[in-house]
Length: 311
Image (cartoon, rainbow, N blue to C red; front, side, top):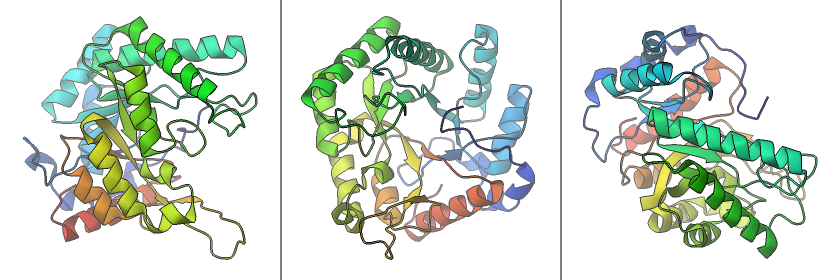
């Protein structure tokens, strides 16, 4: 199971979330409103139960509710339910390594990317997202000495073009998540990829925590976020919400990912800049319990409220 797997959680822990911004008052979202979302782990058997789960969580954005391979009829039902409830399906994850050194794994990853992109296009998701990949033969998303090289950059360009050209999406976009040890590892490298890949349906997935790769960026991450939105903003289709902490009792830099509100990510800047974009969803991830998601959402919404932004 990939890194997006979480433990099943109960919606019973979501009490109180509905009071923050109101489920029914987000039609025609303005720039001062951001769609917040996260995983839904409560079991649902149909679109109605899925929408009810989102209402309980007070989410106006959602991860894709179905997997590749389901029938077109089921996809259409969920797409219709999302539209009627004014929910944006943020992304379909294609988590795999399409530049794996092993040919068979590489082919399987390519297939997963194309089927995921097809699903994203059919269900009307904002994007299909994956990492660019890694040359690490053991860890599909791990660091490797060859990851940040011109040769790998060219491989990413060729592979991404092939994925998009294979599917030819009409609505959605294929995007690469920013990563600390794989391209795109900076705002500038993402700009270069956009130009090199040169496909209309290639876009940006913005995860600012993954770009905090040094103490310099850590303490000035607000400036990095502003630069990213300025340069990449029109291409951003979905964002991830988490946080990062520099451990002060370690001699060399150790920066673990933590729940939103427990780290140093400048959420005031992040939300202000994100609110300038056109209806880009903000998706929480990587937490282990319903209570953690509640606390993360509470922090993000409180920062938003302090800055005149509704989530």
